[in-house]
Length: 121
Image (cartoon, rainbow, N blue to C red; front, side, top):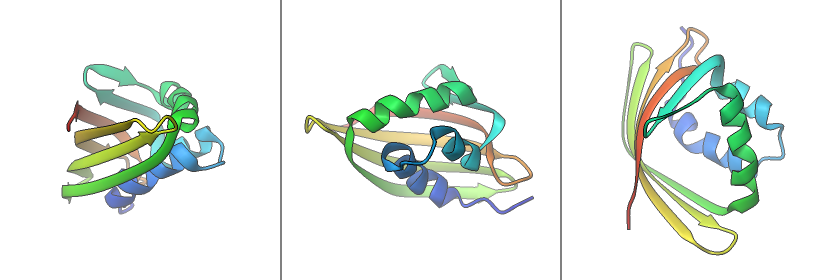
């Protein structure tokens, strides 16, 4: 199995999604397998829905800060507790605490995510 860079998944991926000029599908394909299932707060996103989510994020996000508090990576699985603070173009601050568990494929990309997100502050 390829060694996943879980910290990059948590920190670099959101910046790429929000601010990169790269094609959204190429970003998703760098980090996720084609059959990815992303479960968050009872909603399941597949590859297409993840890609569709990028457009609105790019239009509304002005700033982003991610603080990783705890991680654990072992045997193709990873877990984290982190805080994400986003600033919209209208200067609204959105702060979330995220608990995320990921399962990696043999090629080092994420094939499944289970997460819970809650607003804070």
